[in-house]
Length: 103
Image 1 (cartoon, rainbow, N blue to C red):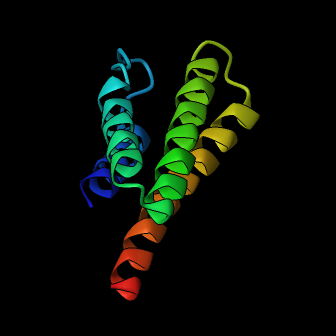
Image 2 (cartoon, rainbow, N blue to C red):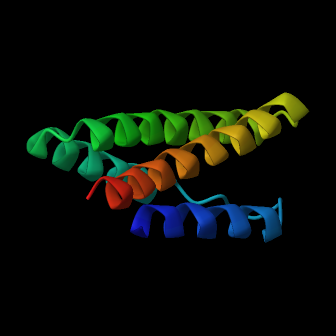
């Protein structure tokens, strides 16, 4: 749930921030994703392994596309970043949804 909240806050802040400001590093969300990956593998939860790996890869894609978009404003990078964000938040929401319906 915390990861979904952080991704939502990232989305809102990135949409409202001034494009000429210094862009902070995205390490905090990725560290959270790595911690979730470790816990999923530790507890051998197939549902959370799939959700956390999909979310982590999506966060990496969003960070990469964002880094590519800043120096060269190609619209495709912005679109890919937004789609990767939606994929990340959807994967974590899916993990939460399946966790509640399975238990």
